[in-house]
Amino acid sequence: MPTFTKTHFVLAVSNLRASADYYRSVLGFTVRDMAPGWLFFERDNCSIMAGECPDAMPPRDIGDHSYFGYVVVEGINELYDSVVAANGNLIKTLIDEPWGMREFGVRTVDGHRIMFGESTPSCI
Image (cartoon, rainbow, N blue to C red; front, side, top):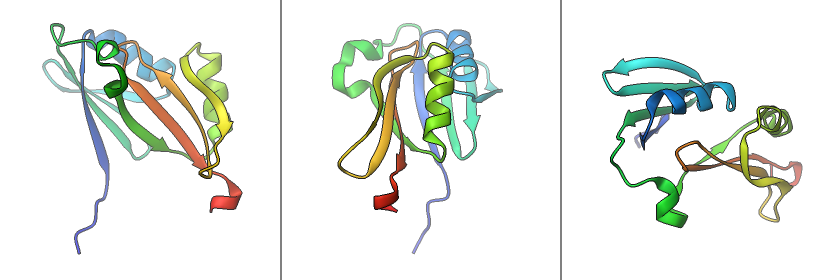
């Protein structure tokens, strides 16, 4: 049976440098060049390929479909504290959910929404 080894997200962003700054300064990603008009945002086993598309419909205009990922992390409390300290745009504060995840959500400068979660002890 084939095994999935890593997930890459691909996003259209209106301003590549503004997005790079957000992913670096708020979410702690490393930013590296990929090709003209594209950057990689990487942190641990999460990788996002961002392409500059200034004329694309802004994610904030597509409502619920602006969610693009759910990232499972270890150390959710520390990540949350660092996002809050960096003035990240929270769409959901840190909370223990009944489905066994401690999670929070952010909205990026382009309007994409990301959820971050960690299994609670009763779910492990």
